Image (cartoon, rainbow, N blue to C red):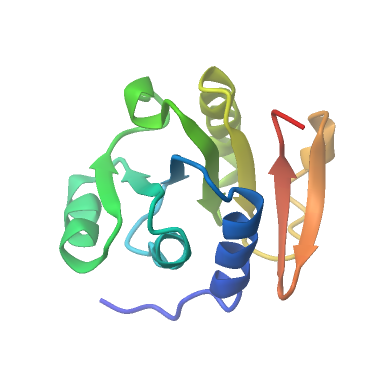
Length: 151
């Protein structure tokens, strides 16, 4: 299975590795079969536990077999908080809009920052400024939204 990886994979991974240098744990939720950002983060941050989560066992099994990141089955609609504890960042790539409140709530429960890389650079369906603290970030060839819990 191969799908063209995101053109901004390396930019996202570079931003995360700079912004979260020294983090113990970083988690990508709703990864599907595409852990490219997580894999690139792991290469830049070998001492950080990089976890990818999906609610489908076949996807996390595939990732565990093919990549150097830890794949765990979990559902953000009813998350096992132990997976996310001590994460400095929870991020998602091209998420469905209806899942975002669950991502926000999960990150708030474990006091993690949230990074959302929408489907397109100017995805009109997402309105992050409605939640105080969101910043739109342009880093190299990537555009995404970031909510920092700690300054």
